[in-house]
Amino acid sequence: MSNKRKQTRRDFLKTTGKSAAWLGLGSAIPSIVPGSVMGQNAPSDKVVVGMIGLGWRGMDHLRDVLRRKDLEIAAICDVDRDFLLNAMKIIDDQMGLDRVWVDGSGGGMRNAAMPPKAVEGYADYRRMLDRKDIDGLIIAVPDHWHAKLYIDSMRAGKDVYGEKPLTLFLNQGRNLVRVARETGCIFQTGSQQRSAREFRQACEYVRNGRIGKIESVSVGIGGGGRLQAVPDEPAPDGLDWDFWLGPAPKVPYNPQRCHVNFRWFFDYSGGNVTDWGAHHLDITQWGLGMDRSGPLSVEGAAEVSPGYHTTFTSFDFTFEYPNDVKVYFGNKNKGGVTFKGTKGSIWVTRGENKADPEGIFEEPLTSSDIRLYKSDNHMQNWLDCVKTREKPVCDIEIGHRSVSVCHLANICGMLKRKLYWDAENELFKNDKEANEMLERPERAPYQHMGRS
Image 1 (spheres, rainbow, N blue to C red):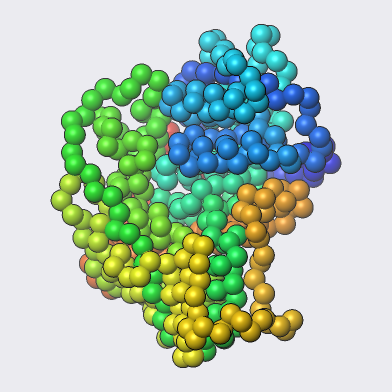
Image 2 (image 1 turned 60 degrees about the horizontal axis):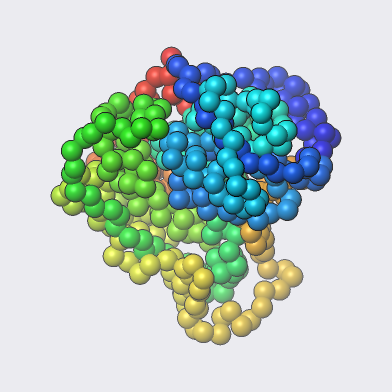
């Protein structure tokens, strides 16, 4: 990126009086620094990024990044050495190289033996935040690490593409929005359905009354993972288990808890209610025009099937929204999002939407109709906004409001009673126990707001 854009951000931080400093963790862990040669210095119109989290979703992002000509990758990070080395091999293969650079000193920065434009690898993300040459970070880590990493990154002056669900518990979201506004961070929540034509079209036709007054929305997702218990064991060599746990409670390593399966434990995620719910309830909010608000109440039931997991495997919730709209959210509903109005219905899922009557989509929208934010590529939209400083299609406030609906469902399922929600103040009405569940203890020194 050009010096002009970087100077603009520094000026903003200076004028707001906000420091780019962030809370350090308790003890440093060694950094592994492999890398691959990326050629000459990047042109000024390229965005220079680092990547944190190299599991299956992070690797999707890495392959996407390597295909882009307007983006340069400078560093990658993961607490699992195998993930880090696998990513380095892909980078080397992509660049036609047959070597991986490793700095065994643990220093975490370039050494004399490394080329000047190597991609550097880190086990400790804090070392990456110190780098002034990185414009933004692409973060794809387990949910319990989202808030801490997002806030540290924003306070370090980085723009962020952060995976959904935005938060592990609801109160983290308002803190994230506040820090984003204080720092001027361009934050794209990874709810990529906002950048898919079929979802945008469905929501535009709903918002413009093409199926009449909306009476209800049906949202269907899977019930979630079921795990069988296996014995605890020593953490694999190369995985810093304590750092992986971060703000979550300290427990012995178990292979069922780590990596992909983390999402089936409330310590690290919210199950499919937040994992897929953050996608389809996001579209529900978009279609209803509720990106800055939320439901009035939630009721329903949820169950956890026998097994080692703790998140809900079966659930059926009903949200009441303004204007007498009901949203039915469950694992037995038709997959996707179905908007039902007085004149018809629109169903949408990935790659497909259908209207009833069939001719609804054949009547084009007019210049006087509501048109929603158009993005045809979620990552590209973020990169464009990093350059223009405009808000992206799924700005952090939207990501917060959408996953808040999911958190309300999980709290309702735990308490087994109807709850009334004050969306403006983001509190339950007259329910102390429910309000206490809007946040959780976080293990020191990994608290997302740096509390001692």
